[in-house]
Length: 360
Ligand code: PEP
Ligand code: MN
Image (spheres, rainbow, N blue to C red):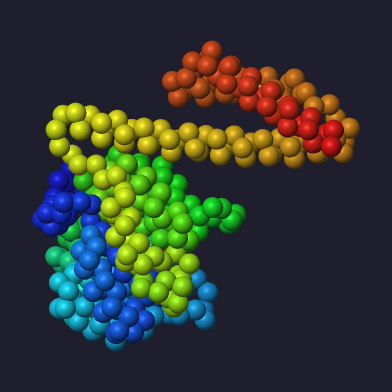
């Protein structure tokens, strides 16, 4: 897969003036709902209608999709609007039914990508197909598992491939429903620059108000497209109501987003600079998050020391840390002088945090 330059042929052939926009409801609910959304999307930049027909729900009892019946609605929406269609397939039977109903893009969901057995079953069912297959990242932050799924399809002679970044689940509640962990798709982009990368801001956000900023970050990182959950009455959607936006909001969003075109020397320079800066911003954000977590652990140690009447400063332990970090710094091409400066500052901040809890 490494040296293949044709992975993005399907996208180039579409000859779009902007990153590809896939939009539509989380779930197909009724024929009227699918058709109404499709017609509204005709007024936006979207060229592909998405709708879940079979819904993998984490807990039973939630809406699990209308099933094969909904494929007829997608077909009708395509006839009436000319939009391409996309749906999730989670086993060989889904593949069979989707192909019979001429679905254009099949995607593999996050709960499926985690299972090599099911991925293989789907890849076998799609052997040699010309259909476009998009693979969502697995629910857990594991790049190898994600790439492994892509490789299984590639080995089955499925050439029109792409991936969808939908974030990674965490046990702790964060700002996101699924943590973006931008570094993972950035690593993937570095390894496979020809593999089209699409952002699903809806499942990362789990809420409407941060969808725009997620899309902007993705475009700044040169993503190839967006897949956005869209419904004419988001609050009444049968699944994922909190994260869906209306086609009108989607339209405004694509007008407001800065989409960078790849032409001209000056523009190209600026684009590249912007992409690199966004990568730095992602790493800076991670640095601060890690430092924040480190200070919280220091505070826990502070409480422990207080309860056991132990002094804050433990010189032996500190010298051990410094020695270890100087060695690890060397492995990462970081000078001893820099490591000393940075760890002295971290140590001081740690002591301040411990003093705070000890004196409480
Ligand atoms: C979906 O796209 O509606 C969906 C279920 O997504 P994911 O597999 O990313 O959870
Ligand atoms: Mn959904």
